[in-house]
Amino acid sequence: MTTLTKPDLRPANPNFSSGPCAKRPGFSLQALDDAVLGRSHRSKPGKAKLAEAIDRTRAVLGVPADYHIGIVPASDTGAYEMAMWSMLGQRGLDILAWESFGSGWVTDVVKQLKLDDVRVMEADYGHLPDLSTVDFFRDVAFTWNGTTAGVRVPNGDWISDTREGLTLCDATSAAFAMQLPWDKLDVTTYSWQKVLGGEAAHGMLILSPRAVARLESYTPAWPLPKVFRLTKSGKLIEGIFKGETINTPSMLAVEDYLDTLKWAESLGGLSGLLARVADNNQALNDWVAKTDWVANLCQDEANQSTTSVCLQIVDAEVLAMAPEVQSALAKKIASLLDAEAVAYDIGAYRDAPAGLRIWAGATVEASDLANLTPWLDWAFETAKMEAQNA
Image (tube, rainbow, N blue to C red; front, side, top):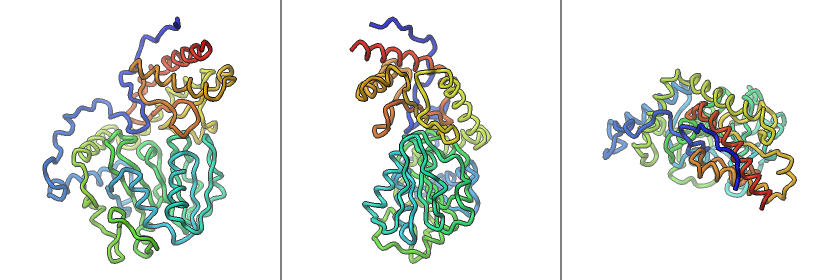
């Protein structure tokens, strides 16, 4: 039995999952009352809703007018796979990976597409590959924010202004939370269930004019499934980018996405979202700075994720324990907080180093993160005591 005292205050919302992420503050199912249900998504009101989702996306994210925005199936995975299978292979590829999802794209390129000219540029969890070695004469594929490692690219300065290849950016946990330099990005993908806390299964595909030119001038050597086809007779299928989706979307999920976009607009758009993310990170960073048992997995502050914050246990007594004990201790912290209904789903990703992963995106309240931190201390001390007494 432990005599450690539990904190008095609790987060009002214990949802700190890194995906699907917390719903926006004040959300209720009544926000979806205007959903176009029982109607075709190709009906006039259905198409209007889909077009509205694209238009509001452009406005909030500041996507240039000559970029195409499409709603596609299978979440961010579907959007990024669609881009890779449709565009890669014309020239060599530099692909970057420093965590689980980036490594998944490497697997697709090397083992599924089996491209001939690929340079895989990898780094361990907590680090970035050397961005200065990327060759922009080639195509470049990367994640903006590595959700499972808590590591992001610091900005777009490393991307050449005179690039000849395309940049393919998986931005699923960065869109609406980090400033994306659209002039540097040719293909950008994300999913609704991340920063804005929407519902899953739908992805967004944003294409620059350069990406459209590639699609219309290049035919891959491999066959493309119907859900990946973005062109017909050598021309972009424009309807996809006006709300005429490739497959049937959930109009309930569309309504939820519209609700998240309207909430973002009520905050002042992207600047309001970024301000909330900054406040959330301040709450977590202030605690990490004064806490000796925990540290950010990413040591370079400029590269630390501001949404999916990955923490490692650095307590000397814990580090002296066997690796399997350290892993069990980290999982125990997460389970203790889950049992107390204080924090759900904050364990490190299954492929990542043992530790904690706390979502700090815009739908999370800074006050909830501030109230969470004493509970993290309590759970750590409780789990450590149990491990020492085992």
